[in-house]
Each structure stands twice: as C-alpha cells, then as structure tokens.
Amino acid sequence: MPFEPQACLFDLDGVIVDTAQYHFAGWQRLAEELGVPYTQEDNEQLKGVSRVDSLEYILEKGGLFLDNDTKVRLMDRKNAWYLELVASMTPDELSPGVVEFIDELRAKGIKVGLGSSSRNAPLILERCGIADRFDVIVDGNSITFSKPDPEVFLKGAEAFGVAPAQCVVFEDAQSGVEAALNGGFRIVGVGDAVTLERAEFVIRGFEGFNLRGLVERLT
Image 1 (cartoon, rainbow, N blue to C red):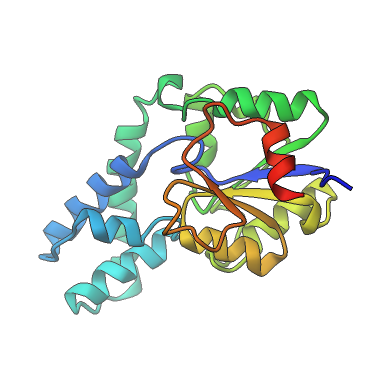
Image 2: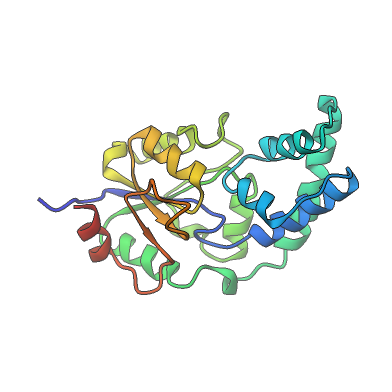
C-alpha cells in the first residue's frame, strides 16, 4: 500500500525561507560586541536551535558567564537587529517551488503546518504573504524545549489530530531531523545530504518536487 500522508509540517528557516543570513548578521554583531569570534560555521551549528541555546553557545565559546537579566537583554538586542532586517522581507525570498508544493498538498486535502523554534515565525509568514496557507502554526512562543526535542512537532500533530507516523516533517537542520525521528514522524531533509543523512531522503529544494514524488519515496 502506498504511504498516504495526512499532514505535513515545515520548518521555517532554510525550508520555507532562508533567513540564515539575517540570523548570522544579528548573532555576529552581538558576538563581536562580546569579543567572541563568530563564523558561518558557527551559524550552521545553530540551525534549528532556540534563541536561548544560541546565546549560550556563543557565551560558552567565549568562556563568558553572565546573569540571566543580562542574557535576556542581549537576546532582545539581537532580536531587534534581526527584526529590522526581516521587516523588509518580501514573497521573493520564499524558497523556489515551496508555495506550489504547499498548494498541491492543500488541494489534495493534506493539512499543512509550521513547526519552528523561531518566535518571529508569524511575522515572517505575514511578510511573505503565506500565513493563510497554514492550518497549524507552532513556533518558539508556544514550546518549552528546543529541537532535537520533538515537542514542536508533537504539538503540531496534536493540533492536526494526526498520528506522527502519518505526518511528514520537512527540515534543513540536523537537530530538526533528530527531533522528527525522536517524535516518530516521517522526515524529509531539505539541503545537504551529508548533514541530513538521518532523514529518510533529502531534496535540494522544492523546485520540481511534488506529492507523487513524496509518496513514492516514503512508500
């Protein structure tokens, strides 16, 4: 019997849109102020990681120990810089082919949701003009645990009323792939096949990708 997905959950950054450049600019600016070197390689390590854990990564790298109030202020500053950048986002920054794929899923009665650690996810979806395409949105404002904990995806499946095994997750980060596996979801990697080797299969992007290809490769 062919696999019949009942729902799909998409990560945001690196899957629907590529905001990595904006996160990089914000974290690098903050790290430089703290005297900590911050590279693109560091940014890769923080894909799918929460704001709190991202700051802790930078502080640990610099051997810095700060009180909680200071940490909150630093995270707020980084987020303010980030929001300045994403405020200028347009639908042109959507990943090629992703809207067409989402529309195909919806046309076939498959539920579509977002599962992202980003607290700014609703804003980004609005800026890109696609918020109305999502039946469920679970973001960093409604979760306690970061990926690879499966909480964000489990809450999405619960909101759908769908078992994890009938829900496909699309992720570009290793931590997100692990989160999906930990929750019992079907998992498709988006991006680098080596980094995402634990996914059931990996696509470079959504151009030319369709529901038939998804079903065939998960059956």
